[in-house]
Length: 407
Image (cartoon, rainbow, N blue to C red; front, side, top):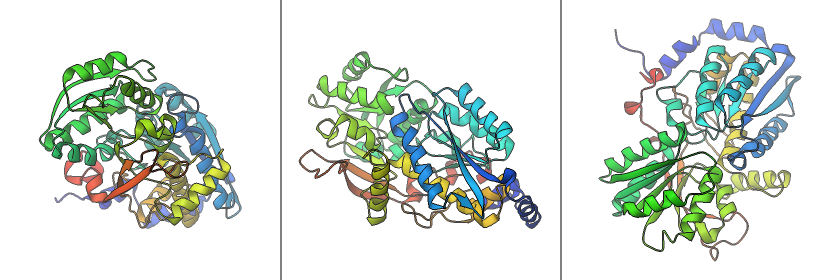
């Protein structure tokens, strides 16, 4: 018998039938409240990447719905997962089992997301990833109820690795954070390097939330690699790139390749250090009139800070979820996820973007170069967009995926 592929397989898993939709409509809104959980690092090394900013973005999305849908209040609950899988999983379990949370948006450590994603699939509840990056979440660990909204370890380094190797920067050394996210990032990037004809000559792992990168940078220097890839984020990224400048890494001829940078990180380390870095990003506040309008609204509410891709993605995910609740008339997980997949994402940052059966939001990515201090004319005027990476080129193709929902 011929296998059912793509969305048909996804719909079959969800049992997306007319009978299901009718039953969901009969259920209406459970507990007479639509409850959304925001789980992220609120105080640790990744807090600036999402944390309180993602909470504010979610509040904006809820307020744009008037705080209710058909008379049913929309409630936001918030948790600090402390970058610990056991804490994150326990919070999610309590939210769903005891507090009536209908959906979760998560954006910190991949190890937490993998645990929560499995539990949410068992409970048949939507789980939107906004900032969590391991590509395994939509690959071998995919579920019918999770959706990757922003970025992953496949999409971020792909264009950067290919362009650098083709420019002759063909030997690489990795400085990688020692947990699921970093290791997956290194593995994905290594494939892109080798596919382009390059070679990885060495790597070193560092603990999360490291302050001293001197020994790792000395190993990278000694390797003789033309490129030092930084497979980390948050405060780790800020620390290693500042110390790399102090060591004179780039002045001596080696190139730094951050595999993922958010604009708050650029703001933190300053253009004097970050200028000239080539990056790939899913969102830039100054891309067009709609993104600028959102950026201004966010800054007015959040102490003058500009939204990054995690915060913008959180707004988008909550907005799309609420649209699905409104269109179905229920917060039943199966009916809502089915509606989210069937309806293209349309908001200030995405237009007619589809959600693939593996949960991947098929958005374009943008190649950018970080401006010099002289080129920047105002706060957060940091990127020059140099190209658009179409969704079909940015994300893992179906032919390479191990996700059963795509088979």
